Image (cartoon, rainbow, N blue to C red; front, side, top):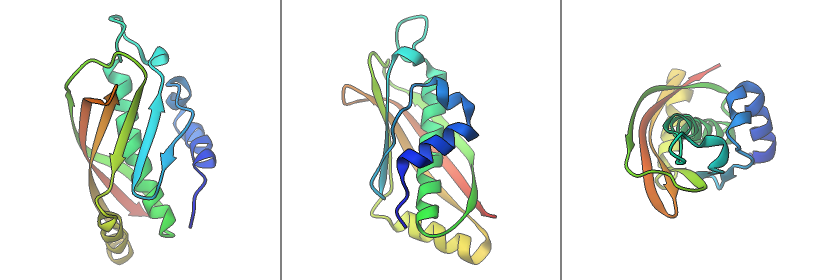
Length: 149
């Protein structure tokens, strides 16, 4: 099942009002990876660089979106939550940035869908990166849990 990222983002903004303020206008999803291009201006801190809280929120949402989209494409309606995350801020974000998360050859999503189908829940471990000028500025390692509704 193909999901419209335009419709998904519009729905997501009704569910998580914070997203209206972060400048997110598009999701790029190809079935294995998700990218969220984001302007610096609404996410700037007092030093003129990317606010860490904005980066953390967008990275968390990116992993949530990837997990949710993977499950929906496989016909599964689940509540998805982040159960654990670890953040590392590696470099300042000095301009517009992109948040990127990928699956490895799609097998993780298939295994997750199988676990949810068999047990009613499953987890997916993801690495989400915030990039500015092609440099990794922040990395989130997270565990997302899906529970069938």
